[in-house]
Amino acid sequence: MRRSPSPRVSCRSTFGFALGAALVLPLGLTATASAASAAGGAAGGLGYPAAAMPAAIAPAAKKDPMRLKVVGTKTARVQVQWKNTKRTKKYLVEAFSDARLKKKVASKRTKKNTAWIGGGKIKENQKLWIRITTIDRPKQLKSAKLRVYTGVRNPSAPSSVSARPMSPTTLRVSWSKAKYATAYIVQLAPAVGATPVWSARVESPTTTLDANDLVPAQLGLPAQFVVTVKSDRMGKTYATSSAIPASLPFPAPPTPPTMTIGVGSFNVLGVTYDDAKGRSYWDRVPLLAGQIQAMGADLIGIQESSWSLRAGYPARPILALGAAVGMSVAADPATGAECSTMSDHVLYTPGLYAVETCGEEYLGIDAGFRRYVTWVQFRHLPTGQGLLFGSTHLSVGSSTAVNNLRLTETNLILESLNVHNPQGLPVILTGDFNSTALQFANTPAMVLAAHGLLSADLTAPDAVNAQYGTVHNFTGTNTRGARIDYIFASPKVQVHQFSVQYSAPASDQPSDHYPVRATVSIYP
Image (tube, rainbow, N blue to C red; front, side):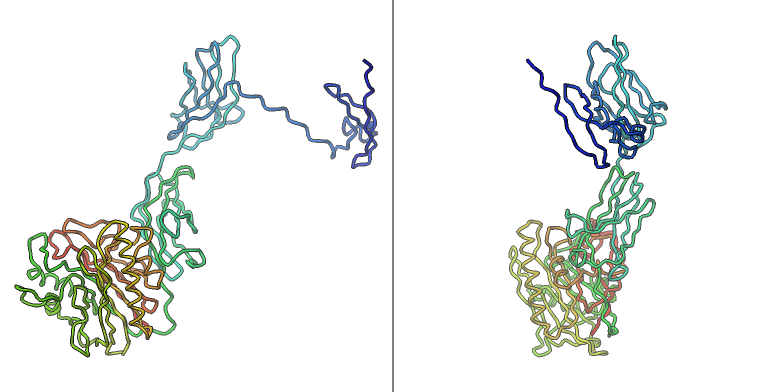
């Protein structure tokens, strides 16, 4: 067969050199190259100027015949594995601290095709290069070098996390030191499990961070959001704290406050129950009165002290408690009837306040118990300042169905407060809500926050005994700050301090709840 002549390609390079001479390539392919000019020939074999020389094509990396790879890590150790080779009974495993494999830091011999490297002077997260060499094979084989990092120990999760607002845009987050942590990451997210929208990293041993210039709406955070702190070891291993609720207070109104007062809430344990020492309600009244007096509050929401006068009762339970405390039970000034005929009441200091109007709203029935909210419009006699105050007790239970019932009750409370507050007075709502702030994806505290009633335990810059819960059942309370008793406040109420009126032992208490108290300023 007659071979066709090699084709010629004629073109001009971008540098203006005519290309014409044929260059024979492997497999019989041809291309053209220019005759080297005096300048170009000196610069490059194909006549390109030095600056225009094509980059050298790197040869394909050789495939590692032993397929060395990392299969595990532990603290300051790394496990490697490779392919068994024929006619090999032993392998030499070497670790180096440099890529040129000059500084050996560890070696071992093994009959297996896997080995742990570490110990001695090898540290956590240390960069090493590993090489495997056959020992007794007729033709020695060496693996390609493999860059690895030794493992890092796991830090413990931060504990005792708290978030305390320093201003409407600054949140101070603090936590207890976590074992093995080299740094911490503070994160803010809309809800538990949601993607954080704000984070900051601080080096250990710092355990406090001020998150400044926060505007929740701009960050996509709701009025009540969550804070977590993640412990970080060398940027490799992490452990995250439990989420806690947080809120930033509303900015103070431009006008000065008209008064600063103490307010509180207390579930006193129903009349039909005895305490852990077998004391009846009537035996407990003096003890309950002592706890209420110790609060030093002007207005107090009371739950589970009923109005009903039953056979064997020496007096109406709430009136007996009010008399023992030296406070009045809110009653309608027009009719003289008590504001509540159930078990949610409001005590107030006589001579400082006058009841303008009041009432109770039915919220529904739960396991035979009727749920209400009692609302009272007060006028502060020295200043004339008006205030809407509420007391409630929501349905009890930990199921989703009961939580949905509590959400319905909360929305009914909001409707009632709106109807009975046409003047736009400052609002304080107290009560036993039978739900912690993050117990479900949506809780009464979240609903109220979204409608402008923030929890005093979250917005107070100063908190006393805030690590304690409020229900102890005579055996003790949690120390995670998970509470079911609340004081909520509207934008015209600035909270200065919140406290759980904690005392021990729990078995001596006259109620299964601790009271809560807040110091607040009321704005017109």
